[in-house]
Length: 217
Image 1 (cartoon, rainbow, N blue to C red):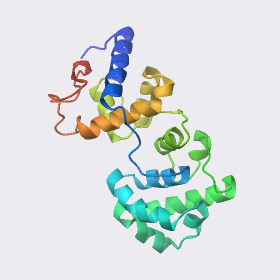
Image 2 (image 1 turned 90 degrees about the vertical axis):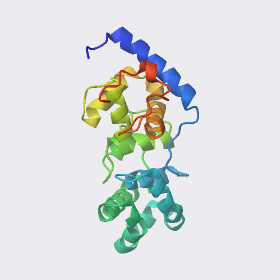
Image 3 (image 1 turned 60 degrees about the horizontal axis):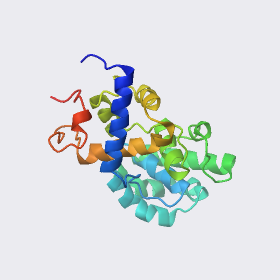
């Protein structure tokens, strides 16, 4: 497919934003949390796991562990058992404890508000940092690129990259900064409810007229 001109793409992205805004006016992070630490923990646990499963696990986890020190000082085996059903529980427990020790030692037990400080924590990459900054603090420092965002960005021909960091850079150029967090929510919600990986519901799609269906047979 030939590339559309930059002005044409800008008009299409603006139309996409308005269509997604109308379709998902209540879009939000679907991980349950009540403070930045809980969101950080939930996001670390969400790797290779569904939000639904994470929410089931954190319902008990957050009652038992309330501070960064609680995670840092917990017996490793106890923490592993508590998060076992999220998968990769040994790696996740190790990352959680390392991150929380750093929070206690370097940040007074509080979750920092900068991308640089967050990504220095064990188990916290750019995607996790963007989730925390955008949702817990209302700071648009980047676009969260998970599997849904990557898939839809490619299908919508907003990027031809495969690497999440490069996809994010393309999206940041196309979407107004104040909408970076919301835009990722819109694509995630659309990916979960309409634009499925194997059998996308193109017939019922609210943004079908704006989609070139790249990668869809």
